[in-house]
Length: 124
Image (cartoon, rainbow, N blue to C red; front, side, top):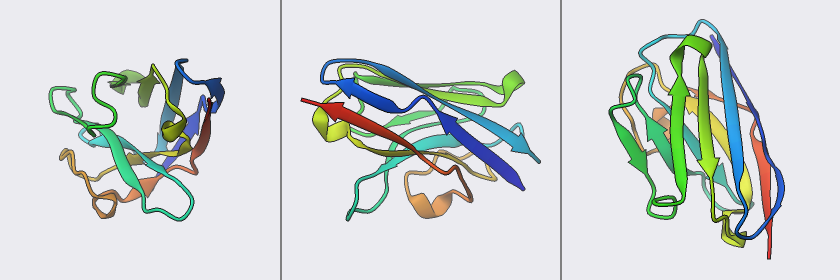
């Protein structure tokens, strides 16, 4: 079993920045792909960014390209999402997720392990 705990969410003004962090514990696998999803009430979860174990394979949703950066520190079992130039439409609950394989999928159903989520609110 893998446990994921996110931190770093909060309230920020439009144009500001936040860095989300996620620590994995339990039976962690060094070859897991990890990603960040987000969800707005009444809508389905959507991928924001994903990263392979080596960091060589990256995926960014169109909405994140040029503004968000995903990174990981395997020695610390951490994954990060640095968000800049935030917009009110980025307001959502952000989830850290991990796969059992080193494949950066873009569907929520491809990820077995989910954190509890952290709220990000961007005010206009």
